[in-house]
Image 1 (tube, rainbow, N blue to C red):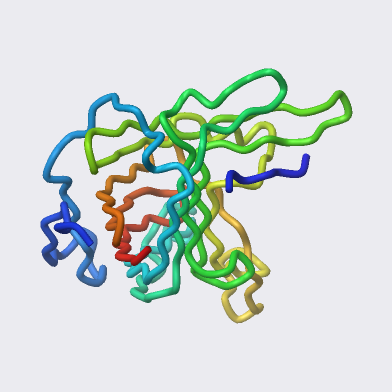
Image 2 (tube, rainbow, N blue to C red):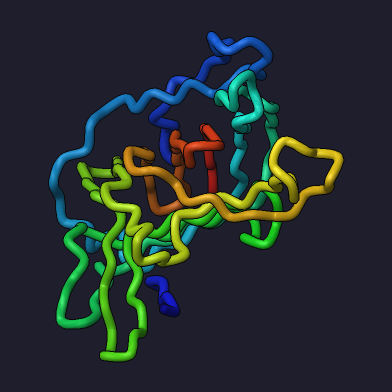
Length: 221
């Protein structure tokens, strides 16, 4: 299936550094939304575009511990250019995305290690026509929004909501070399943010199973 995406105020997050209970983790961003979004009309956001920088804290896990147990294999912090786009709810296959707006948030280029792709919904072309897959449950209250990845649609292999991160060519053998690999975000991954006409702030926290990540984005219109 081939996908088709939709086409500063006060930062709403309190940011601090913390140490993980897992030894060796770098300080991570703690992002707490200052208000909970409620149902609202999202038409004022349709067509809004913001670009800026995403700062990411990421933990990498593997299953190379004693007895093939899960273990922390490394931690990274980095920054990448990012864009945030809002649009009309996606439509396709006779269905409409059940959110007040569509959202596409891109960190880097997905071919780059560390890049991420968030999409609230996508329309896919299939042999019988088109099908709409909605991934995120989004809500809007005034200038604040929040969302949760409710259905990753991994069974359909849609190629959305991904993190690119290198993995060893041979498991548990980093000396074998690494190759870029896309990891699907798990359900429960969450975002929250605030937008104005001139700027946007967004925070995200989630997992792919072998990657845990937190990020903060600030951008200008």
